[in-house]
Length: 258
Image (cartoon, rainbow, N blue to C red; front, side, top):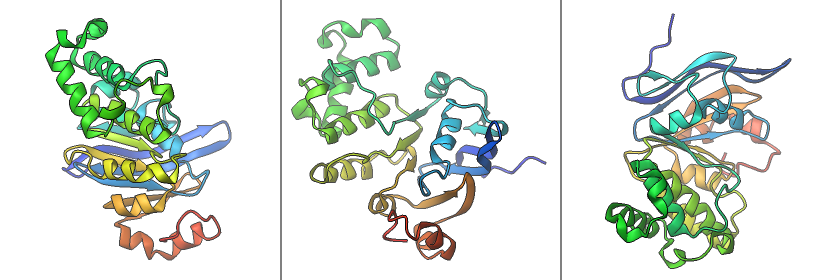
């Protein structure tokens, strides 16, 4: 019998299994991301978080299970087609064009998303809509002051902000944030944390993160993975007081709040 998906669910993963030879990296994981959610996926190193995200985004095809995005089965859909349907991901490691400026980068992404495609290189003034949208993103993500700098010269925190701005330029309905503050120096974190907190309310966000300060300030629901298996799920208070979660994190130094 198929699992019943709640009506307000925008992304549903049911019974996901991922085997690599004799190793089971993801073991019967079910996760429902509700519309407008701020949902965190946590777990110690090796818990299977990255494998799960790779399954959701199409980098990997599950051995078993089903993934549904807004009522459509996307289990075997190519990654770029998932982006076109509104699911966008950021990565732990920056994947940016170092020789381009933030303005050029965002103009390129906006142009591609709006169908202008290969015309992105024309002067920005030739497309008022592209220029306006790129400008809005630069302002919203606090990049206006570095808009004309080559990306290679940006502070690491600004590079992370640009990566999230690129994701938002694709107008996602589901945004997967993969460790957005990883590697960001302490002095650059506040700007990034504030920007993540101010993401559009109509975008459903799944956050993968080790930083428990960010997780507990951001999430309204949390899923805990351990050894590729769903340990528990609930609101932040429930997770913080769950003895199973405390036991898992004891000694890992990753969950001061748990």
